[in-house]
Length: 242
Ligand code: PGA
Image (cartoon, rainbow, N blue to C red; front, side, top):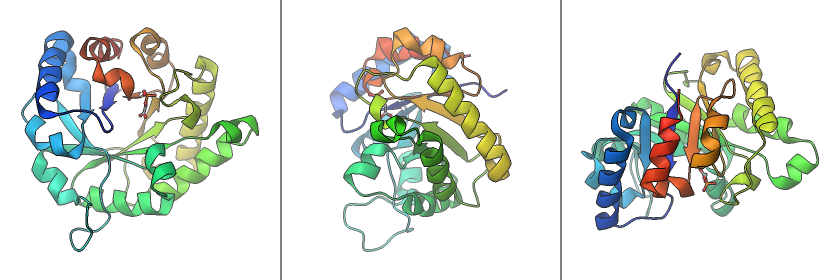
């Protein structure tokens, strides 16, 4: 069994001085657990954090290898800056930037060709869960977002119910268990090339709920937003990993 992956998504937070201080404190508090941690800072901080002792991930990339794409970042640039991972299809990009699953798959293909591991995010909205359509929504997102070149080595899925992101409303153990079992079954049956890919949970993961979430079958780690900005809390989450 691979060790659980603890990913910190800093989103649009962090300046150089406080990022270096945060990494130093995180190294001190996390100890040997840094080996399982990935930090995804804003793009401006990727290169400066290259030798801070953590694996690095970007929060997005472009599907093209280079060219006239103002404001975008190519996968070769992410590799150059020291990244091993890239988050794709985060709900904030799906909602605020009209990111489609088709675009996520195209980005993932380019990222895999460059040797990056993709963390592909999926998850239903509050309305979709209220309507009982969460399984169908997540299955459709996965089917369209995961490219044919994906493998269990170059792809990690992250189940992040939109209603749990940044809201403090964490999904119940039963809901996480049911969805992760559903995703595992769906992958094995329909997308066997990623049948055994790790499936992270994300959405209001904190130090005080990480242990129970990380114990759930088929939870391969966590994707942490707000709590990853607090070194002591993020280290405590990593220490709950098995
Ligand atoms: P949160 O964010 O932990 O602040 O809810 C999770 C995410 O967006 O990846």
